[in-house]
Image (cartoon, rainbow, N blue to C red; front, side, top):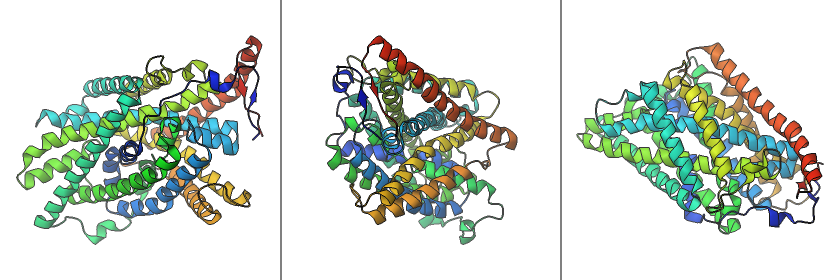
Length: 486
Protein backbone atom coordinates (compact mmCIF):
# COMPACT_ATOMS: atom_id res chain seq x y z
CA UNK A 1 0.00 0.00 0.00
CA UNK A 2 1.23 3.47 -0.83
CA UNK A 3 1.42 6.07 1.93
CA UNK A 4 -1.53 8.33 2.62
CA UNK A 5 -1.78 11.51 0.58
CA UNK A 6 -2.62 14.78 2.32
CA UNK A 7 -5.02 17.06 0.45
CA UNK A 8 -4.66 20.10 2.65
CA UNK A 9 -1.96 22.29 4.11
CA UNK A 10 -3.21 21.34 7.56
CA UNK A 11 -1.28 18.35 8.93
CA UNK A 12 -3.03 15.19 10.00
CA UNK A 13 -1.46 15.20 13.43
CA UNK A 14 -2.84 18.64 14.14
CA UNK A 15 -6.36 17.70 13.10
CA UNK A 16 -6.58 14.22 14.58
CA UNK A 17 -7.70 13.94 18.23
CA UNK A 18 -5.36 12.28 20.70
CA UNK A 19 -6.21 9.85 23.50
CA UNK A 20 -4.57 9.51 26.92
CA UNK A 21 -2.00 6.77 27.68
CA UNK A 22 -3.53 5.29 30.83
CA UNK A 23 -2.76 1.53 30.65
CA UNK A 24 0.31 0.01 32.31
CA UNK A 25 1.45 -3.66 32.36
CA UNK A 26 -0.66 -4.61 35.36
CA UNK A 27 -3.69 -2.97 33.77
CA UNK A 28 -3.07 -4.92 30.55
CA UNK A 29 -2.68 -8.29 32.29
CA UNK A 30 -5.93 -7.71 34.16
CA UNK A 31 -7.59 -6.48 30.96
CA UNK A 32 -6.53 -9.68 29.17
CA UNK A 33 -7.85 -11.87 31.98
CA UNK A 34 -11.22 -10.12 32.06
CA UNK A 35 -11.49 -9.99 28.26
CA UNK A 36 -10.24 -13.52 27.46
CA UNK A 37 -11.49 -15.51 30.44
CA UNK A 38 -15.24 -15.08 30.12
CA UNK A 39 -17.13 -17.28 32.55
CA UNK A 40 -20.35 -16.65 30.65
CA UNK A 41 -19.34 -18.92 27.76
CA UNK A 42 -18.16 -21.83 29.93
CA UNK A 43 -21.58 -23.26 30.95
CA UNK A 44 -22.80 -23.49 27.34
CA UNK A 45 -19.58 -25.35 26.48
CA UNK A 46 -19.54 -27.63 29.53
CA UNK A 47 -23.14 -28.65 28.75
CA UNK A 48 -21.69 -30.79 25.95
CA UNK A 49 -19.74 -33.02 28.32
CA UNK A 50 -16.15 -34.02 28.97
CA UNK A 51 -15.17 -34.08 25.30
CA UNK A 52 -15.00 -30.29 25.49
CA UNK A 53 -11.83 -30.58 27.61
CA UNK A 54 -10.05 -31.97 24.56
CA UNK A 55 -11.50 -29.16 22.46
CA UNK A 56 -10.09 -26.63 24.94
CA UNK A 57 -6.62 -28.16 24.71
CA UNK A 58 -6.73 -28.32 20.90
CA UNK A 59 -7.88 -24.70 20.69
CA UNK A 60 -5.23 -23.49 23.13
CA UNK A 61 -2.50 -25.05 20.99
CA UNK A 62 -3.83 -24.36 17.49
CA UNK A 63 -5.61 -21.01 18.05
CA UNK A 64 -4.62 -19.32 21.29
CA UNK A 65 -0.84 -19.68 21.02
CA UNK A 66 -0.87 -18.40 17.39
CA UNK A 67 -3.11 -15.52 18.51
CA UNK A 68 -0.48 -14.38 21.01
CA UNK A 69 2.21 -14.52 18.30
CA UNK A 70 -0.01 -12.55 15.90
CA UNK A 71 -0.87 -9.84 18.44
CA UNK A 72 2.75 -9.25 19.46
CA UNK A 73 3.99 -9.29 15.84
CA UNK A 74 1.32 -7.01 14.41
CA UNK A 75 1.36 -4.60 17.35
CA UNK A 76 5.13 -4.29 16.91
CA UNK A 77 4.86 -3.59 13.18
CA UNK A 78 1.81 -1.33 13.31
CA UNK A 79 1.48 0.38 16.70
CA UNK A 80 -1.36 2.82 17.18
CA UNK A 81 -5.09 3.03 17.77
CA UNK A 82 -7.27 0.60 15.82
CA UNK A 83 -5.81 -2.89 16.34
CA UNK A 84 -7.45 -5.40 14.00
CA UNK A 85 -8.75 -2.54 11.84
CA UNK A 86 -5.32 -0.99 11.41
CA UNK A 87 -3.53 -4.31 10.89
CA UNK A 88 -5.75 -5.63 8.10
CA UNK A 89 -5.75 -2.20 6.46
CA UNK A 90 -1.96 -1.98 6.39
CA UNK A 91 -1.42 -5.56 5.18
CA UNK A 92 -4.36 -6.21 2.83
CA UNK A 93 -5.78 -2.80 1.92
CA UNK A 94 -8.46 -0.35 2.94
CA UNK A 95 -11.61 -2.43 2.43
CA UNK A 96 -10.21 -5.46 4.25
CA UNK A 97 -9.21 -3.22 7.13
CA UNK A 98 -12.67 -1.75 7.29
CA UNK A 99 -14.36 -5.17 7.07
CA UNK A 100 -12.11 -6.54 9.80
CA UNK A 101 -12.83 -3.63 12.12
CA UNK A 102 -16.52 -3.63 11.23
CA UNK A 103 -16.97 -7.32 12.09
CA UNK A 104 -15.02 -6.83 15.31
CA UNK A 105 -17.29 -3.96 16.29
CA UNK A 106 -20.65 -5.42 15.22
CA UNK A 107 -19.83 -8.70 16.93
CA UNK A 108 -19.40 -6.70 20.10
CA UNK A 109 -22.87 -5.22 19.74
CA UNK A 110 -24.20 -8.78 19.64
CA UNK A 111 -21.92 -10.08 22.36
CA UNK A 112 -22.47 -7.30 24.91
CA UNK A 113 -26.20 -8.17 25.23
CA UNK A 114 -25.20 -11.77 26.10
CA UNK A 115 -22.98 -10.40 28.88
CA UNK A 116 -25.90 -8.35 30.16
CA UNK A 117 -28.12 -11.45 30.13
CA UNK A 118 -25.50 -13.42 31.98
CA UNK A 119 -25.31 -10.67 34.59
CA UNK A 120 -29.07 -10.97 35.08
CA UNK A 121 -28.86 -14.75 35.53
CA UNK A 122 -26.12 -14.48 38.17
CA UNK A 123 -27.09 -11.32 40.04
CA UNK A 124 -30.48 -12.69 41.17
CA UNK A 125 -28.61 -15.06 43.47
CA UNK A 126 -27.55 -11.98 45.44
CA UNK A 127 -31.21 -11.63 46.44
CA UNK A 128 -31.11 -15.03 48.14
CA UNK A 129 -33.12 -18.25 47.68
CA UNK A 130 -36.39 -18.08 45.78
CA UNK A 131 -35.32 -15.58 43.13
CA UNK A 132 -33.50 -17.89 40.72
CA UNK A 133 -36.38 -17.91 38.24
CA UNK A 134 -36.45 -14.13 37.80
CA UNK A 135 -34.27 -14.22 34.65
CA UNK A 136 -37.06 -16.16 32.92
CA UNK A 137 -39.19 -13.00 33.29
CA UNK A 138 -38.44 -11.17 30.03
CA UNK A 139 -39.43 -7.72 31.38
CA UNK A 140 -37.13 -8.11 34.39
CA UNK A 141 -34.25 -9.47 32.32
CA UNK A 142 -34.56 -6.69 29.72
CA UNK A 143 -34.78 -3.92 32.34
CA UNK A 144 -31.70 -5.03 34.28
CA UNK A 145 -29.73 -5.62 31.06
CA UNK A 146 -30.49 -2.12 29.79
CA UNK A 147 -29.68 -0.49 33.13
CA UNK A 148 -26.25 -2.16 33.28
CA UNK A 149 -25.56 -1.30 29.63
CA UNK A 150 -26.27 2.39 30.27
CA UNK A 151 -24.09 2.43 33.41
CA UNK A 152 -21.07 0.79 31.75
CA UNK A 153 -21.33 3.03 28.69
CA UNK A 154 -21.41 6.11 30.91
CA UNK A 155 -18.37 4.97 32.92
CA UNK A 156 -16.39 4.41 29.73
CA UNK A 157 -17.33 7.89 28.52
CA UNK A 158 -15.73 9.22 31.69
CA UNK A 159 -12.47 7.71 30.41
CA UNK A 160 -10.15 4.74 30.84
CA UNK A 161 -8.86 6.43 33.97
CA UNK A 162 -12.28 5.48 35.42
CA UNK A 163 -13.27 2.60 33.14
CA UNK A 164 -10.03 0.66 33.66
CA UNK A 165 -10.88 0.26 37.35
CA UNK A 166 -14.14 -1.44 36.38
CA UNK A 167 -12.11 -3.70 34.09
CA UNK A 168 -9.54 -4.35 36.85
CA UNK A 169 -12.24 -5.02 39.43
CA UNK A 170 -13.87 -7.39 36.96
CA UNK A 171 -10.57 -9.23 36.43
CA UNK A 172 -10.08 -9.62 40.18
CA UNK A 173 -13.70 -10.77 40.54
CA UNK A 174 -13.25 -13.26 37.71
CA UNK A 175 -10.06 -14.65 39.25
CA UNK A 176 -11.54 -14.97 42.75
CA UNK A 177 -14.78 -16.49 41.43
CA UNK A 178 -12.83 -19.05 39.41
CA UNK A 179 -10.63 -19.95 42.40
CA UNK A 180 -13.67 -20.42 44.65
CA UNK A 181 -15.37 -22.59 42.04
CA UNK A 182 -12.28 -24.74 41.42
CA UNK A 183 -11.51 -24.92 45.16
CA UNK A 184 -14.99 -26.22 45.93
CA UNK A 185 -14.66 -28.71 43.10
CA UNK A 186 -11.42 -30.07 44.58
CA UNK A 187 -13.07 -30.45 48.01
CA UNK A 188 -16.09 -32.23 46.50
CA UNK A 189 -13.85 -34.54 44.47
CA UNK A 190 -11.68 -35.39 47.49
CA UNK A 191 -14.68 -36.11 49.77
CA UNK A 192 -17.25 -37.64 47.45
CA UNK A 193 -15.37 -38.53 44.29
CA UNK A 194 -16.37 -37.50 40.78
CA UNK A 195 -19.55 -38.36 38.95
CA UNK A 196 -17.78 -38.30 35.60
CA UNK A 197 -15.97 -41.28 34.08
CA UNK A 198 -13.50 -41.86 31.26
CA UNK A 199 -16.46 -42.54 28.95
CA UNK A 200 -17.62 -38.92 29.40
CA UNK A 201 -14.45 -37.72 27.65
CA UNK A 202 -15.13 -39.73 24.51
CA UNK A 203 -16.72 -38.28 21.38
CA UNK A 204 -20.49 -38.87 21.70
CA UNK A 205 -22.43 -40.97 19.18
CA UNK A 206 -24.20 -37.82 18.00
CA UNK A 207 -21.53 -35.08 17.97
CA UNK A 208 -23.81 -32.45 16.39
CA UNK A 209 -24.05 -30.24 19.49
CA UNK A 210 -20.34 -30.61 20.25
CA UNK A 211 -19.46 -29.11 16.85
CA UNK A 212 -21.01 -25.78 17.83
CA UNK A 213 -18.86 -25.78 20.98
CA UNK A 214 -15.60 -25.63 19.01
CA UNK A 215 -16.52 -22.27 17.48
CA UNK A 216 -17.65 -20.97 20.87
CA UNK A 217 -14.37 -22.14 22.45
CA UNK A 218 -12.35 -20.23 19.84
CA UNK A 219 -14.59 -17.23 20.55
CA UNK A 220 -13.93 -17.64 24.28
CA UNK A 221 -10.18 -17.50 23.65
CA UNK A 222 -10.15 -14.18 21.80
CA UNK A 223 -9.24 -11.00 23.61
CA UNK A 224 -5.45 -10.72 23.46
CA UNK A 225 -5.90 -8.30 20.56
CA UNK A 226 -8.17 -6.01 22.59
CA UNK A 227 -5.38 -3.92 24.14
CA UNK A 228 -3.90 -3.21 20.70
CA UNK A 229 -7.23 -1.76 19.63
CA UNK A 230 -6.35 0.86 22.26
CA UNK A 231 -2.70 1.06 21.16
CA UNK A 232 -2.41 4.82 21.65
CA UNK A 233 -3.56 4.44 25.27
CA UNK A 234 -0.82 2.00 26.41
CA UNK A 235 2.25 3.23 28.27
CA UNK A 236 5.40 2.17 26.37
CA UNK A 237 3.55 -0.51 24.33
CA UNK A 238 6.65 -2.16 22.78
CA UNK A 239 7.89 -3.15 26.24
CA UNK A 240 4.57 -3.55 28.02
CA UNK A 241 2.58 -5.68 25.57
CA UNK A 242 4.62 -8.94 25.12
CA UNK A 243 4.87 -9.74 28.83
CA UNK A 244 1.23 -8.83 29.42
CA UNK A 245 0.13 -11.12 26.56
CA UNK A 246 2.14 -14.03 27.99
CA UNK A 247 0.82 -13.69 31.54
CA UNK A 248 -2.75 -12.90 30.53
CA UNK A 249 -2.82 -15.87 28.15
CA UNK A 250 -1.35 -18.35 30.64
CA UNK A 251 -3.77 -17.36 33.40
CA UNK A 252 -6.82 -17.36 31.12
CA UNK A 253 -6.10 -20.74 29.48
CA UNK A 254 -5.52 -22.44 32.84
CA UNK A 255 -8.72 -21.00 34.30
CA UNK A 256 -10.82 -22.12 31.32
CA UNK A 257 -9.80 -25.78 31.57
CA UNK A 258 -10.07 -25.84 35.37
CA UNK A 259 -13.54 -24.26 35.47
CA UNK A 260 -14.92 -26.54 32.76
CA UNK A 261 -13.69 -29.60 34.65
CA UNK A 262 -15.21 -28.28 37.87
CA UNK A 263 -18.63 -27.75 36.28
CA UNK A 264 -18.56 -31.30 34.93
CA UNK A 265 -17.67 -32.64 38.38
CA UNK A 266 -20.31 -30.54 40.13
CA UNK A 267 -23.38 -30.82 37.92
CA UNK A 268 -22.43 -32.81 34.83
CA UNK A 269 -24.02 -31.94 31.51
CA UNK A 270 -27.24 -30.50 32.97
CA UNK A 271 -25.88 -26.96 32.97
CA UNK A 272 -28.04 -23.84 32.71
CA UNK A 273 -26.21 -21.60 30.21
CA UNK A 274 -26.99 -18.45 32.22
CA UNK A 275 -26.68 -19.68 35.79
CA UNK A 276 -24.40 -22.70 35.48
CA UNK A 277 -21.44 -21.33 37.44
CA UNK A 278 -23.35 -19.97 40.41
CA UNK A 279 -25.64 -23.02 40.24
CA UNK A 280 -22.57 -25.24 40.64
CA UNK A 281 -21.16 -23.22 43.54
CA UNK A 282 -24.51 -23.20 45.36
CA UNK A 283 -24.87 -26.96 44.99
CA UNK A 284 -21.30 -27.76 46.07
CA UNK A 285 -21.41 -25.32 49.00
CA UNK A 286 -24.59 -26.98 50.30
CA UNK A 287 -22.98 -30.44 50.13
CA UNK A 288 -20.07 -29.41 52.37
CA UNK A 289 -22.08 -27.17 54.73
CA UNK A 290 -20.96 -23.70 53.63
CA UNK A 291 -24.15 -22.47 51.96
CA UNK A 292 -23.46 -18.95 53.19
CA UNK A 293 -20.81 -18.58 50.48
CA UNK A 294 -23.40 -18.48 47.68
CA UNK A 295 -24.43 -14.83 48.10
CA UNK A 296 -20.91 -13.29 48.34
CA UNK A 297 -19.89 -15.50 45.41
CA UNK A 298 -22.79 -14.16 43.36
CA UNK A 299 -21.73 -10.61 44.24
CA UNK A 300 -18.14 -11.29 43.16
CA UNK A 301 -19.22 -12.98 39.95
CA UNK A 302 -21.62 -10.13 39.14
CA UNK A 303 -18.71 -7.68 39.43
CA UNK A 304 -16.64 -9.91 37.16
CA UNK A 305 -19.37 -9.94 34.52
CA UNK A 306 -19.72 -6.16 34.71
CA UNK A 307 -15.95 -5.93 34.16
CA UNK A 308 -16.22 -8.14 31.07
CA UNK A 309 -18.93 -5.90 29.67
CA UNK A 310 -16.94 -2.77 30.42
CA UNK A 311 -13.77 -4.13 28.77
CA UNK A 312 -15.53 -4.97 25.51
CA UNK A 313 -17.67 -1.82 25.45
CA UNK A 314 -14.60 0.36 25.93
CA UNK A 315 -12.25 -1.55 23.64
CA UNK A 316 -14.49 -2.09 20.63
CA UNK A 317 -15.76 1.49 20.56
CA UNK A 318 -12.30 2.46 19.24
CA UNK A 319 -13.11 0.74 15.92
CA UNK A 320 -15.89 3.13 14.78
CA UNK A 321 -13.82 5.96 16.28
CA UNK A 322 -10.95 5.22 13.87
CA UNK A 323 -13.36 4.47 10.98
CA UNK A 324 -14.92 7.90 11.54
CA UNK A 325 -11.48 9.50 11.29
CA UNK A 326 -10.90 7.58 8.04
CA UNK A 327 -14.21 8.86 6.59
CA UNK A 328 -15.71 5.41 5.97
CA UNK A 329 -18.33 6.10 8.63
CA UNK A 330 -19.81 9.43 9.77
CA UNK A 331 -16.98 11.72 10.85
CA UNK A 332 -18.70 12.61 14.13
CA UNK A 333 -17.93 9.06 15.30
CA UNK A 334 -14.29 10.21 15.39
CA UNK A 335 -14.98 12.94 17.93
CA UNK A 336 -13.53 12.82 21.42
CA UNK A 337 -15.14 14.29 24.51
CA UNK A 338 -13.76 17.80 25.16
CA UNK A 339 -13.29 17.08 28.86
CA UNK A 340 -12.69 13.33 29.18
CA UNK A 341 -10.82 12.75 25.86
CA UNK A 342 -12.83 9.60 25.08
CA UNK A 343 -14.62 8.54 21.85
CA UNK A 344 -17.98 9.34 23.37
CA UNK A 345 -19.96 9.45 20.12
CA UNK A 346 -18.86 5.92 19.17
CA UNK A 347 -19.63 4.70 22.70
CA UNK A 348 -23.13 6.16 22.60
CA UNK A 349 -23.95 4.69 19.18
CA UNK A 350 -22.62 1.30 20.23
CA UNK A 351 -24.73 1.42 23.39
CA UNK A 352 -27.90 2.34 21.49
CA UNK A 353 -27.52 -0.51 18.97
CA UNK A 354 -26.80 -3.03 21.75
CA UNK A 355 -29.87 -1.80 23.63
CA UNK A 356 -32.05 -2.30 20.56
CA UNK A 357 -30.71 -5.84 20.15
CA UNK A 358 -31.43 -6.58 23.82
CA UNK A 359 -35.06 -5.59 23.31
CA UNK A 360 -35.60 -7.24 19.91
CA UNK A 361 -34.16 -10.58 20.92
CA UNK A 362 -36.62 -11.00 23.77
CA UNK A 363 -39.43 -11.26 21.23
CA UNK A 364 -40.48 -14.88 20.85
CA UNK A 365 -37.48 -16.95 22.00
CA UNK A 366 -36.75 -17.94 25.57
CA UNK A 367 -33.93 -16.27 27.45
CA UNK A 368 -31.49 -19.20 27.10
CA UNK A 369 -32.21 -19.59 23.38
CA UNK A 370 -31.83 -15.83 22.89
CA UNK A 371 -28.46 -16.00 24.64
CA UNK A 372 -27.29 -18.86 22.39
CA UNK A 373 -28.43 -17.23 19.12
CA UNK A 374 -26.73 -13.94 19.93
CA UNK A 375 -23.59 -15.77 20.99
CA UNK A 376 -23.40 -17.91 17.82
CA UNK A 377 -23.70 -14.99 15.40
CA UNK A 378 -21.21 -13.04 17.51
CA UNK A 379 -18.76 -15.94 17.09
CA UNK A 380 -18.88 -15.69 13.28
CA UNK A 381 -18.33 -11.93 13.21
CA UNK A 382 -15.68 -12.04 15.95
CA UNK A 383 -13.54 -14.60 14.13
CA UNK A 384 -13.45 -12.74 10.78
CA UNK A 385 -10.69 -10.34 11.93
CA UNK A 386 -8.62 -13.34 13.01
CA UNK A 387 -8.69 -14.67 9.46
CA UNK A 388 -6.89 -11.45 8.50
CA UNK A 389 -4.53 -11.55 11.49
CA UNK A 390 -3.31 -15.06 10.79
CA UNK A 391 -3.31 -14.46 7.05
CA UNK A 392 -0.96 -11.53 7.66
CA UNK A 393 1.54 -13.82 9.40
CA UNK A 394 1.50 -16.22 6.46
CA UNK A 395 2.00 -13.30 4.07
CA UNK A 396 4.99 -12.02 6.04
CA UNK A 397 6.56 -15.49 6.06
CA UNK A 398 5.99 -16.00 2.33
CA UNK A 399 6.92 -12.58 0.94
CA UNK A 400 9.63 -11.08 3.16
CA UNK A 401 13.20 -12.30 2.49
CA UNK A 402 14.09 -11.41 6.06
CA UNK A 403 11.13 -10.88 8.44
CA UNK A 404 11.38 -7.41 10.00
CA UNK A 405 9.24 -8.05 13.06
CA UNK A 406 9.57 -9.90 16.34
CA UNK A 407 9.60 -13.47 15.01
CA UNK A 408 11.36 -15.56 12.37
CA UNK A 409 9.90 -17.02 9.19
CA UNK A 410 9.21 -20.50 10.63
CA UNK A 411 7.35 -19.18 13.67
CA UNK A 412 5.30 -16.80 11.54
CA UNK A 413 4.37 -19.54 9.07
CA UNK A 414 3.44 -22.16 11.66
CA UNK A 415 1.45 -19.74 13.82
CA UNK A 416 -0.26 -18.16 10.82
CA UNK A 417 -1.21 -21.45 9.15
CA UNK A 418 -2.42 -23.08 12.36
CA UNK A 419 -4.46 -20.05 13.41
CA UNK A 420 -5.92 -19.48 9.94
CA UNK A 421 -7.17 -23.05 9.47
CA UNK A 422 -8.50 -23.29 13.03
CA UNK A 423 -10.37 -19.99 12.65
CA UNK A 424 -12.03 -21.08 9.39
CA UNK A 425 -13.07 -24.36 11.04
CA UNK A 426 -14.47 -22.53 14.06
CA UNK A 427 -16.58 -20.26 11.86
CA UNK A 428 -17.97 -23.20 9.88
CA UNK A 429 -18.83 -25.37 12.90
CA UNK A 430 -20.76 -22.68 14.77
CA UNK A 431 -23.45 -22.91 12.07
CA UNK A 432 -24.39 -26.24 13.66
CA UNK A 433 -27.04 -25.41 16.33
CA UNK A 434 -26.43 -25.76 20.05
CA UNK A 435 -28.78 -27.92 22.10
CA UNK A 436 -30.70 -24.88 23.41
CA UNK A 437 -31.97 -24.12 19.87
CA UNK A 438 -35.56 -25.28 19.29
CA UNK A 439 -35.94 -24.50 15.57
CA UNK A 440 -33.18 -25.46 13.11
CA UNK A 441 -34.59 -23.38 10.25
CA UNK A 442 -34.98 -20.18 12.27
CA UNK A 443 -31.46 -20.64 13.61
CA UNK A 444 -29.92 -21.08 10.16
CA UNK A 445 -31.93 -18.11 8.84
CA UNK A 446 -30.63 -16.02 11.75
CA UNK A 447 -27.04 -17.15 11.17
CA UNK A 448 -26.84 -16.85 7.39
CA UNK A 449 -29.11 -13.81 7.19
CA UNK A 450 -27.29 -12.02 10.01
CA UNK A 451 -23.85 -12.72 8.53
CA UNK A 452 -24.86 -11.48 5.06
CA UNK A 453 -26.59 -8.42 6.54
CA UNK A 454 -23.58 -7.23 8.52
CA UNK A 455 -21.09 -7.94 5.71
CA UNK A 456 -23.38 -6.20 3.21
CA UNK A 457 -23.70 -3.19 5.50
CA UNK A 458 -19.91 -2.99 5.72
CA UNK A 459 -19.69 -2.96 1.90
CA UNK A 460 -22.27 -0.16 1.79
CA UNK A 461 -20.39 2.07 4.21
CA UNK A 462 -17.08 1.51 2.45
CA UNK A 463 -18.00 1.59 -1.24
CA UNK A 464 -21.04 3.90 -1.16
CA UNK A 465 -20.87 6.14 1.91
CA UNK A 466 -17.08 6.43 2.09
CA UNK A 467 -16.62 7.13 -1.63
CA UNK A 468 -19.48 9.64 -1.66
CA UNK A 469 -18.20 11.51 1.37
CA UNK A 470 -14.61 11.99 0.18
CA UNK A 471 -15.45 14.24 -2.83
CA UNK A 472 -17.76 16.30 -0.60
CA UNK A 473 -14.96 16.95 1.89
CA UNK A 474 -12.53 17.88 -0.85
CA UNK A 475 -15.03 20.30 -2.31
CA UNK A 476 -15.49 22.02 1.03
CA UNK A 477 -11.72 22.51 1.43
CA UNK A 478 -11.50 20.57 4.66
CA UNK A 479 -8.54 18.56 5.77
CA UNK A 480 -8.62 15.06 4.35
CA UNK A 481 -6.17 12.21 4.37
CA UNK A 482 -6.99 9.82 1.51
CA UNK A 483 -5.30 6.40 1.58
CA UNK A 484 -4.21 5.34 -1.90
CA UNK A 485 -5.09 1.74 -2.72
CA UNK A 486 -2.58 -0.80 -3.89
